[in-house]
View 1: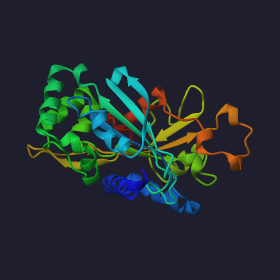
View 2: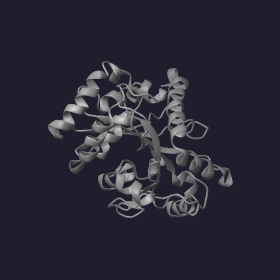
View 3: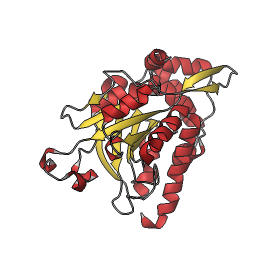
View 4: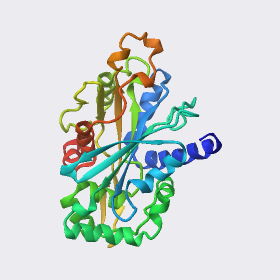
Length: 302
């Protein structure tokens, strides 16, 4: 990891810059949190969406992270949404970083994919058409993410609508490609009082931002140790190949608090490190967080 450390951080920084340029809500919230008591922002994880077909799925984005020392961890399944995901833990060497955001502790990586074979023939036809037009683009998906461009041509408005009727995730991926779907602020790494996710959520809402209300604003894992919330996605203008212009969902920002594991509950607060906290992800939480880009949530936030 050490040999290409600065290169890897720069790639993440380019991805982050594309994300911030397109998503004013995320940009503003990061600035607000950072300016409160000079907070240093640490990212819990970065998330990406992909099409699970012909090499365009999870493996297309995971290669970058595996090459720079990440480790593949658990798989998560979302049968109703026809999705699966894998998450990856960062390397321990060169992980910490002294800066903020992508220059702080390296984040976990969460990559999901649409199980294209389970979609209707019509949806499959659209997705296969564009992934085939991508050529070898899937081998350079990280470059696509860092540049903020699609590896396939812009779709028509009709095709976008067709996909949206069947899968919000599929429609999102068709127009956003490998762009960062969301970054997640590690709430427990902030200074008090924002190091409590309830306080952080209240702070965000007081500033006039809408949070994803699917299943309640705060998503809590069954063991009670992983707490998550998120904003509703921003919308960005998009011109389709047939000249139709329409606002489409872009990305959002998430907040996560990982509580101390029971076996470490007696550790003094100043001795608690990330390794002592709840790791991984939770299907129930993630399933509701996915809704941050859904039409239903965007309509409620309007």
